[in-house]
Amino acid sequence: MFGFKKFVRYSHRSPKWNNLRKEYLDIYPVCAACGRNKKLEVHHIEPVHINPDRELDINNLITLCDNPCHFIFGHLMDYKSWNKDVVTDCKVYLNKVKNKPHKN
Image (cartoon, rainbow, N blue to C red; front, side, top):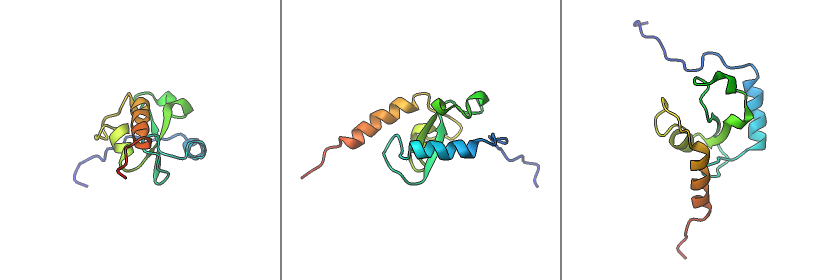
């Protein structure tokens, strides 16, 4: 319209992606960081735009809730970035969530 191109990061997804995503969520139905089971995203640990060959690699996926864990842990609060340590960071945080102190 005004000469701007809309940025589309993943213009081509594998036709197998939707089925794999559903199967993955059946196996891993909670956020790896906070343990929630609502509004989940299947996040690519190594981004597809960096390595398209790993788009359907189940070892390259992690379940994160849409808000806020996907943004915080998956993208370090910047959707143009990614977290190379997302798996470790999620394990550490989930452990803290599960073992948080409570006031009686």
